[in-house]
Length: 312
Image (cartoon, rainbow, N blue to C red):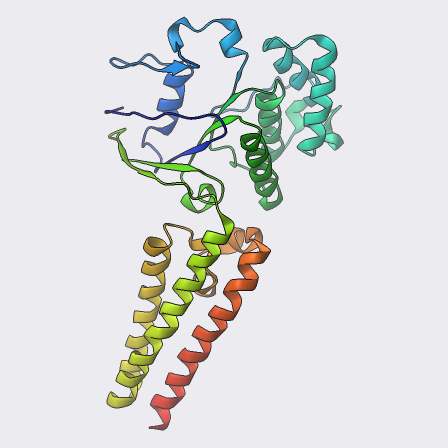
């Protein structure tokens, strides 16, 4: 770590984004007392991590690297154990464990040995153990690992719901597109240096992302007009292909830079295959309704200047 300074406020989703090896997990381990920094200090609820008392740790839920769970116990027993370890009484632990098993759709496997769970369901079990005691602070290291698209949507809803209830959330990911949909703050971490490259403003607004789609689509459609003139003036296939490549590059730049990294939201990018199948599966309906007409306009404009270039 090098000069890291960040604060996670109540009700805020704070995302750490960086490539593998950027230091996201290391930073989280320091915040949880698993590693000791050589300089500086980490504090939980205004108490130094090294001196934090049980009542402080009972308000923290975390999921780092390997999900919590004993293979010989059932998911229900594991979640109850996690609640008890955080100071929840027996009756409440059983009730809250049942709620978490249901919320994370683990009902079907609730009474089976945890060792038989798939990778995705082990991740769900780890999330249930992190959330069961109703913490005030969540520290989650790439929580969407192993989850299918439906699981990613469920996780997103859970984090948003808890942040609305005043829970502070620190989450890490190397997928900027995913955390941009829910995060209030996004921190970019430099590879190997463990340094913060920048702190993004609040971004968790689906309509803002949809607006970025409209802006990107409009700019792409506008680009098609002068490129059509160039192609028609010079004639031939080479200028037309060059014009198409320019549109592809412009789409990528506008979407990745102008839209601040919301590329799975942008329908033009989806048409070019940038978002991938997972992005297509998790796109919001409102964004799809707004972005598809813009994409259609862009495709129409591209087709129009292509035919114009060939006919003239």
